[in-house]
View 1: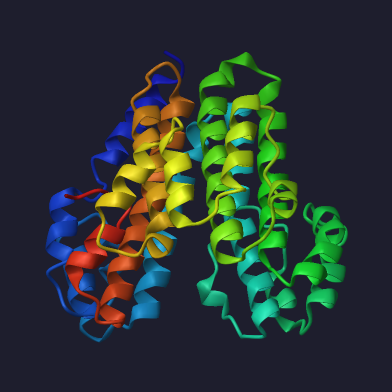
View 2: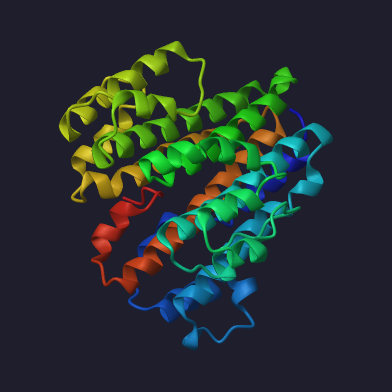
Length: 345
């Protein structure tokens, strides 16, 4: 057992995560102030909500506070990581800066405004988000990003972005950079083989999600789809991706996916009342949620517990946002419950 202190800290933090019963109670509420009140009085979110008059709180303000709390809960573990583990944790922390950058790129693509409060707080940020928000066009944004970690891969994707007019081209390029850099860091130490398996699972699922969107929503051809996969050396998965990229429709895609090691995804899709295209990304994350729980309880290394906890905390925040958005759009809470990553049923 390596870094028993970190294992203990992670398991202690998991005890403070919301339980299924909490989500059941939250789904019964009918307003944002009621959600905030429950979280303030009955959960670990009380510390950040304590000075707030939640009776007047707005949706966006609550989401900002919950996002800040979620990430700060993860960041405070960095001091317990050894040098090698900290390198991986910091690289994983880049995901949040990448998500911020994706939001900016989507805003340039759709020519819509985005406010600073929407962004994730990032430790050791590389990007000046306020400066990027001032830029009007996509071309100027990509030019501004030259010299950053993301500049080269975005610049090389610009031609395809203009050809297809899909911001997903940039999003996939950023995911490719992230997974490639993270795997490069882990390759040097056999100690990280368990985390690498978790990473490969994530890559597989993000690739499946991309193929689903590209084939069934964007109607792209096989060559375009395969050209924007996150790179993998797994011959079996490449064959699966190739088959999925040639799916003739939704039913064919689900049938092909049901014959893979990720068939559990299709079991949920077939039993849900929600449209598959609406639910698909959430089911992908639910698979990751299950795998993160397994990683959390792998006691061989404190890094396993930390990464498992960090992902569970992120998914908890996403579920809280889903409940808040369900209230905003007056959705039936029974349907919102199906959209949650945490399978409370």
